[in-house]
Amino acid sequence: MPSDTPLHSIQPPPRWKFRVRFAKAGDLRLVSHHDLMHVFERMFRRADLTLSTSQGFNPRPKMAFALSLALGVAGVNEVLEIEVALPLSADEVQDRLTRQCPPGLEIHSVRAIDIKTSARVRRAMYALSLPEPIDGLSESCAALMARNECWAERKRPQPRRINVRPFVDELHPHRDRLTMALWITPYGAARPEEILAELGLSALLEAGAVIERTDLELCDELPPGTSGPPILRAATHEINTNDEPMPVAMRPTAIMDNPMSFDS
View 1 (cartoon, helix red, strand yellow):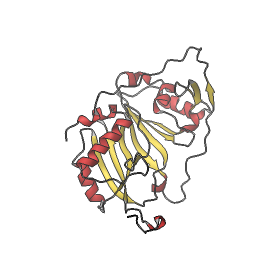
View 2 (view 1 turned 120 degrees about the vertical axis):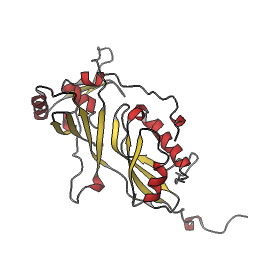
View 3 (view 1 turned 90 degrees about the horizontal axis):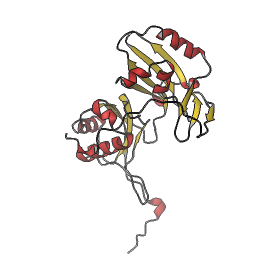
View 4 (view 1 turned 60 degrees about the vertical axis):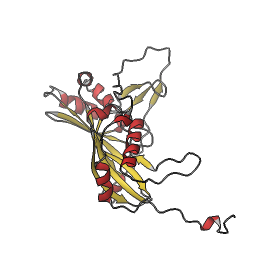
């Protein structure tokens, strides 16, 4: 017998939203972003965390990463937001997830946030450890920051050259590491390996050096009045596919056939 309750009076089920800060390192950095989503989904099932789901014919758990992580890059302080259908505390959610982490994944913190809040990344921080001091690195960094253009070759979604210099906010050489802060905008962002290539440091990556994303700076976690990322629209130039493309550094390949096979 059909219900007499009007559809507009049906209340949605309660849900609670949490922001998870975590690290992805070790061999797990060679797991793709798509597979990392499945790793977390299995962690939620093992931790008996019931996530809210989207509506429609193909409901999906409500989980969102603030910014995807490139294959091979280690994430030191990544951000994941989840909506839970159970009235749990942040400490309980963190404890349940921590017990189910595979090797290479570590939960730093979990905090409750407003259901309408969504992570918006202002800047991404990167670092590269240097095996020894590099002569002239400070001068190269200063010269790059003084320029208006820094062109990089990209192959996807179509071959093109893009000026990535406007997306570089900070670049700091140290004795044992190089750090950078890159703007994240609606029109794109620079890739850390592109900046390293411009500085002549691609050989370090080929020798096995690992780029770390040390932090994601979120707009809602900054002091009031802090401006968002600048409105940048980097110049691009499409490349004729008949032209000989410039050599680019090879990306690492995944080493795990099935990210669901971890033991915890």
